[in-house]
Image (cartoon, rainbow, N blue to C red; front, side, top):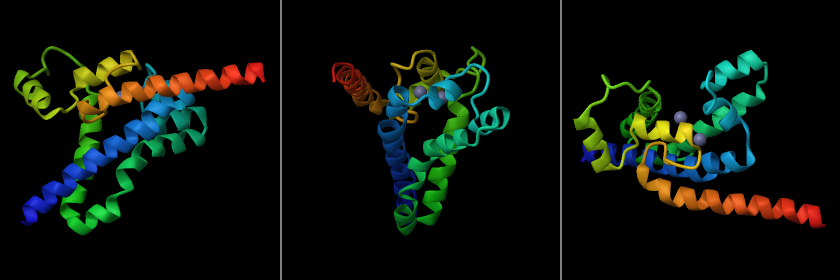
Length: 171
Ligand SMILES: [Zn+2]
Ligand SMILES: [Zn+2]
């Protein structure tokens, strides 16, 4: 029973965290923000801490924190289900951040892992790299099923932004 509770809270943390992060941070940030595109999609520095230090702009750190915050919101609630599972979920979330950003070469590609990820709808480094190259595709940092609704959300927000600016020009 404890194992099931732990697994449940870990999976919930990843599912909810990726959902909030994708729809309330990542997609809006591509439309209205600049730091995610500048820092995370930049060639040189992917780390917000590094970027904040070299540009001497601590405001950048707040944006880095916003990327992590979605995974922390439900921690007090998930902790009630299973503290161990919550810690496991946070650990897996961090591990996935590191894994999805490994350099992609033919040697570190594994067909078994790729198939397993496809089966479980988990974002692979190859898939996440597509997002880094083209910010219109491959959403869902951890889970691939967030991609379709995220792209619709992206289009909607883009339209909203255009309309808003068009309104300003007219009015
Ligand atoms: Zn990335
Ligand atoms: Zn992005």
